[in-house]
Length: 170
Image (tube, rainbow, N blue to C red; front, top):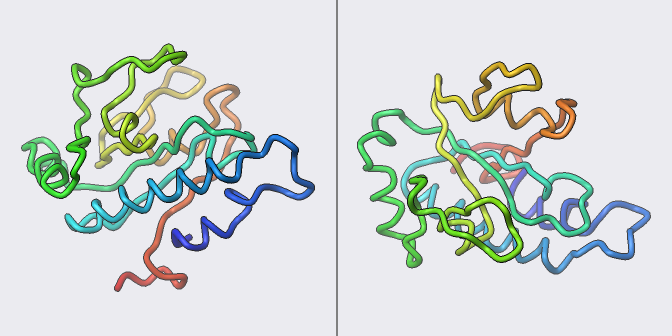
């Protein structure tokens, strides 16, 4: 989906019939923030970007948007990717260092600077990088990890963000 398609979809407007607590304005703000993050990724040459999390489910008020993007392992390991992204991000929020995580009121998990700045967690992915484990404790890379619900291991979808409706990069 394009960002415009996401903004006009049930991910933002809500399912029919609408639930009284559906937070459309918050979801619009999340998509606005996602536009910034996706724009920065595209500016440094990243075009395979995926999102999911509670935003892509029927949760009235999602905490954030979770995502990952494909990158070259050496660009990530060298720090070049992080440096390139922070050059264009006025908030300098691109890091995946555990030491950069900070607490946020009411949340048990420490959050990355990107989450504090945009309420988005966007992680790099390349072949062989483990994102988490399945319900049997087996390691999963992001594509497989994102296709399973954490609470029960049931399959779910993810959204690939494309630049145009036909999916052709311009």
